[in-house]
Length: 473
Image (cartoon, rainbow, N blue to C red; front, side, top):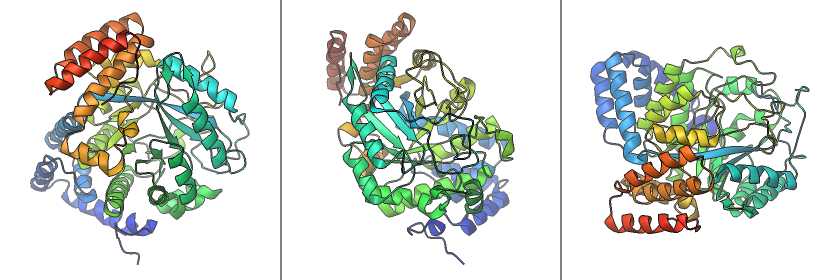
C-alpha cells in the first residue's frame, strides 16, 4: 500500500488516493456535525488556512446557515489579503500544434478539423501590439506540447520578443507561462528568461481518470506531470500556479487533491502555490462538455472558490473568460483575485479585427472588451490593477508569501494598483471608463494608510497625467 506523505517527491505519495478517499469519507461522516463545522470555521477565522480534511468538511456541509458563514468569511478574508483589487491579464496563444491525445481539448493530435497554426516572431509582435493597445501589461502564454514545432527554444524566443516590444506607452511587464511539464534544465531557462509564474493545470488528480483522459502522448505520464512543480521549484522558479479542470472527475476528489498539492509545496519548498486556477470544462471545436458526467452547478462552483479562499488565504485565485459575467461577479466576491479580460483563445486572435473561432481552445463566455470589463469592475467597487511590481522588485516566492501573510503587501499593492489604473485611464480608456476611474482613484487615495505614501502617490499621479509611466513601490 502506498502511504500518504506530503513531504515526498513521489506523486502518488503526496497526492495519495487512499488519503483522498478517507478524506471524503470523513467529510461525509461529519458534514452534519455542526459543532465540528463551527470549530473549523473558527479556525479559518485565524487566517492561517485549513488542511484538506477540514476544508472538505466545509465543502460537504449542506447547512444553509453554515454555508452563509463560509461565504461571509471567504469574502472578508479576500478583503483582508487582497483588498478590493483585481489583477488583470490576458492569455496569448502561440501555437496549437500538439502531440497529446487529451480527450477534453480540441488541440489533441487526432483533431483534423482545426487548422494548425504557430506564430512567427513577427506575428507574436503583432499580437503583443494589439494587446498593448488594449491596455494589457501581463500575459499568460499558452502553447500545445510538441517538441518539434514548439521546443523550449521557440518559447524562449517568444518571451524575448514579447518583452522587447514597446509600442506607444505600451509594455508587457510580466509574462507568465502555461506550457507542458518539462525538465529542471528547461525550467532554469524559463527562469533566466524572466518569466513571472509558471502555470500548469493538473486537469485531474484522479490517476485512473487522468490516464484515461490522456490516452496518448507524453502527457499520459501521470507522475511526470504531477511532479512538474517540484522540478520547476528546483529550477529556480519560486512562483508556480496550480489548478484542475473541474468537470473531468468528481469535484470533491479534485478539491481535496488541489489542497494536498498546495500543502505538499508548502511542506517541501516552504512556499505554497502563488496562484490556484479554477477552470471548468467548456465546449470547443470537437469537445462536448456533456461527454463528461461530472459537471457541477454554478452554486457549487462558487462554494469551491469560497472554500479554497479560506483554506489558502494568501494564494491568488484566477478565473478566466470561460465563465459568464454573472458567475465571474459572484466568484470574484468570494475569493478570486485575478481575471482575464478581452481574451481570445485562438492562435493569432488579437491581431484580427473580428474574433476568429477556428483555432479556439474553448468557447469564451465573457466576450466583453478589456475597457468594458474594467468599467464593470469599477462600478462594482473594485480597483482593476495592472500592477507587476512584486515580480519586478524580486518580491516572489517565500518573500512574497511572508509579506502577504503579514498583511504588509497591502502597502505596496494598493498604491501600485491606483497608479497602473491611472496609466490605463490615460492611455486606453473610453470617456465613460475614464470618468468612473478618476472618481474611484480620488476616493481610494484616502484608503492608503501612510500619509507619506499617500503624498508620493498624488505626486506620481500628476506625473502620469504629464506623460511619465511605470512608477511602483
